[in-house]
Length: 145
Picture (tube, rainbow, N blue to C red):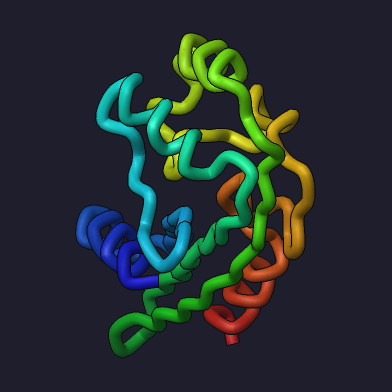
């Protein structure tokens, strides 16, 4: 939520009369945040860590809205548990070769080539994609009230 808030405020500085929606998604394994991979080797390492295990995807959302006397900011987060099947080295190498993992937290995009890695999901799918619709709708309503 802190990162989503920082993003919203940065945009609001340039657009002070706009309503801003910002989000930030992290992937957490055993209490450690898995960042976007630095390179292909790092992407493969991350995918090996996720192989055959459950992890959490947490998305913080912020809505920033100007008001007559300043602004109103509302934030919230949601989490989804994702369990990967056991990945072979070929699965990992083939996926990394697509380039898809390189700009993704946790080195995968569930809506793309990694969809076949998923054994189960507990929580909102759209959260794993990166923008949980139910949270967005609720925060937009709160910000408007």
